[in-house]
Image (cartoon, rainbow over all chains, first blue to last red; front, side, top):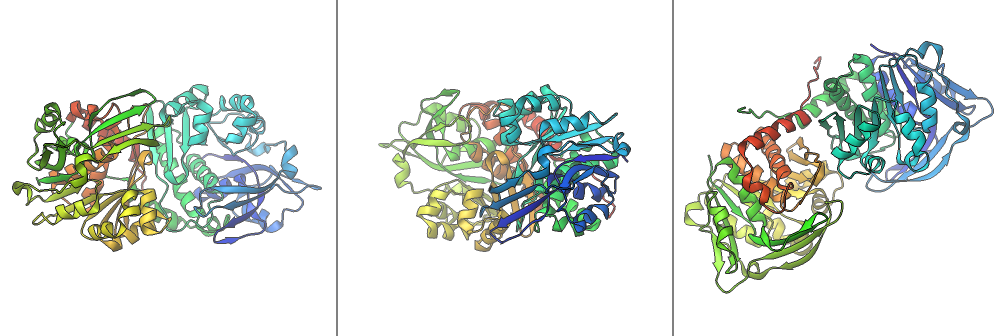
Length: 308
Length: 308
């Protein structure tokens, strides 16, 4: 079993969907990644920053699940990062109503001593220079995974390329893969992105699943078709947490095992959307995860005998 | 092995893509279905209509592949159905430049005597009353599959519902499934559509793959991510031909075998797009089909041991 270092926002979200609305609830990429990864019973730490308005009950959610919080800085005279969004009727597209960086604006990540030897690093979606500074504090990582988005491609492309060169896995969506590579075909896009650095390219397609590329090989994991999508917030980060948590647990970074990691990511993400915010991830049991894994198996596995 | 009866247009297409342009070439839903289905070495017949401008070389393409043409009516003083379209740079969306129904306008399908006992019927996308009239000429079908599109939902909804009640499988895309059912969730959409009649609902998502629903079960087959999509024309009908051809070959209409049929449909469709029109389907070999089946296996199959 390997240690997992997580970097990502710990935040307040205020979410509106056609089904309902919340005030400030626990959110943030780092939070979702951690809550998913801890399902694998690994040692993980989160490097992030909050303000003095971050309540004990939220710290306890992470502490109770054994997430090391030495790297979670509390800024005494600052306010926690806040995001507010509204989902459209299709529960897919959303508008950002408000983003208040608050303490995130001056965030300088400090990896705790005990995690400088982390084997697996999951760099949640943040400014590439923040992601880079974390890489520079890790002694001998076995696998570095990076999530990013088009915002950083639009505004900090050179910094982004600098950090992408140094990672093993990149996770982005299909539009971002096309933007970053200049290619329309996802096969060609992944190949171009591999040339920049990452041996593994994960292209997330939301409700259309996720593609994994490595050298000339490909793997596809569907997103589970659902009756109800209650709140999609955090699904992508839950995917990242399931993916990196599984890899940290197994310590196997081969393509074969990476496929399983993608399946676990998709599996956990399918639960996240069942309730508001992080709620479903808090009471999700191993039994439920396994039961749904069987659904993923029957969703994708087939038996055709080949003559050759 | 079962006999397959195919109903669908036999046509001229004029296609424009960013890569090139054709004048009138062989096309039509019925043509693509037949060319895919014949890969399974089954007995198939096509019921359709052409004008006196349909050249011998095109008849021979079908004859050489053992497609029974007794039901392919030739209207002596008429012109063959013509469609012209232009694909956008994304090779996904297209504009219809011209549609000339010609002899299709008065088409009254006549199933040949020798095929009134066909076990499998593949009703390509046509006016629902034409599809219905074919069903009424078949004595004892084991499996009737129907393809349709939003045009018929917009213009002939009651007729469409009448024919849908009588089929076993419906194939439509995700937008059409939502329109027909009034549901956004594809799981709920499929359930509602099953209530109208078909035990099996296939929801085609183009480059995002295809979903198969039956009772409370689901199966998903990806579309193969490709380096080049040269011409998408006929991909959906090739899918239908692979699907129905495989089912006719195996005579097994269980959910388990239907999954394999979906995989074969997706497999053959991935070849169709490699060249203009029907070109790739004409020289496609069994070896190539099997080789690509291995790609589909490695694209989707994974091994996670479950403790329960």
